[in-house]
Length: 304
Length: 256
Ligand SMILES: Cc1cc2nc3c(=O)[nH]c(=O)nc-3n(C[C@H](O)[C@H](O)[C@H](O)COP(=O)(O)OP(=O)(O)OC[C@H]3O[C@@H](n4cnc5c(N)ncnc54)[C@H](O)[C@@H]3O)c2cc1C
Image (cartoon, rainbow over all chains, first blue to last red; front, side):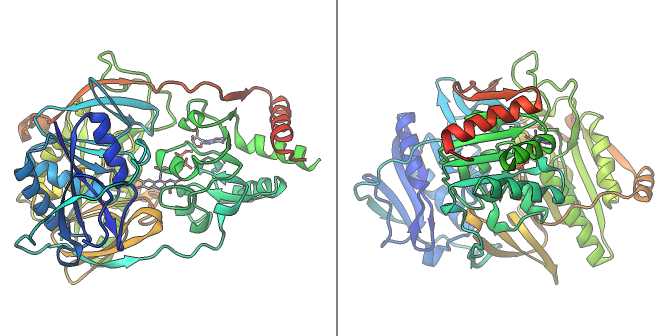
């Protein structure tokens, strides 16, 4: 069995998630072949065959060109699996490759067993086991679900030529994340507000709780998107990654993108009216309550 | 310009889920249904574009049983002009390829200048359908946008990457855009618009007549995640709960 692993490169670096693909290939028992649109001076540390196209000529983000390159490698290597990270690069490119090859695609894989690949359903409240019907499967892996392999060795590089044709999609450059006003990564205690707070006014209650506990307050994405808190307070895959001693999640369901930002916390307390919210899976203490009653009550205990 | 917006009806994620008798999907009995959150951004962006262009027609498309028309009415009340309901009693049996094939079968040759979809659905979360539709129609796909603009026939936007980094991208229309959370602020339908929406046309087509493609992914089973042991559960009376939690805070963190 053979797995073609689609490595990622951004701003002169191989992205960490690349090494998760390697440990997944090992779990699959598949021989890894790697593919990257990157730079000969910044190759993944991996002992094995690597197809390389230069980002300087093929574009750092150019879905049609990268698809054409991948199709060429697939034709040459005849893999059983084409494996991507479930990242902004991977979830954009994978369906294009799946359609062009007639493969079935399984997204956001958490785990695997004999019968198939396990993916989350309904914000992780359920798990679905899936398998592709045909000979080729296109897979994307949930970030962090498979521990990154130790980077080691150097690949045997096979250079790819620039494919003919231009991409109708134009990539015009990257914009860095805004500089954070609040550095949550240093906070030892973080109390975060989720959509469950219900309205903007309730942010104050969460900020007060954070203060009473001697910490900072954070937020989930919907709270930031709604303009109830600034982006520098967002915890998660598209916000900050935090590792406090104590993380208190108030009215946060525990979507995987949120968990990615706070799973390194030493101790997690969740306050949620839904006992089955997926945050319960990572919580050391799960308080099943309406936060609008519970938080003020807790505050008066702390202040009293 | 003709604009297509693909929307999906999903259960409220705070529902108590049960499995269906086959054990392949969740049971759809006793659920509260709503519009997929990502699709609300898609509808809103289409309506804003229509406001910008003046001369545009927005068609919303949904696949599913009759209940999806409730959600379509919300999109019509937000400002879409007409609906296309592709009737299918059990759309969950189709994989992403099957769903995208139906949408593409409808949209092909209809001359849509832009197709908006959510970047993913809240229940399945595959992030495939919008991109597949674009590839099937051979249109450029701008996925995961958190900013959108349209000038002189060209779509420009920002894709959201990891850690808050954004990539500026653009393409000539016709094109497909998949919408990420935070792209805009979806409006609430006003009462007069809700009344007006009742008169807007929803055309019904049947999935089998459009041609359901054989799937490429098989469902083996659905299950609840294994419960993690060891977590402490605090439940019941407020004053008891606070004192239990205070004990934890004192013992573990010497807070107070
Ligand atoms: C590519 C991508 C990147 C993303 N990046 C991030 C990210 O960086 N950070 C992030 O947070 N999300 C991110 N998301 C969004 C993520 O998928 C979820 O939508 C989001 O985390 C949900 O936020 P929430 O838990 O606050 O809201 P919801 O999921 O709506 O949960 C609200 C919770 O509040 C509870 N609740 C409601 N009322 C009460 C009450 N009165 N008392 C107590 N509890 C109550 C409910 O039971 C529920 O569990 C991303 C999504 C995508 C697709």
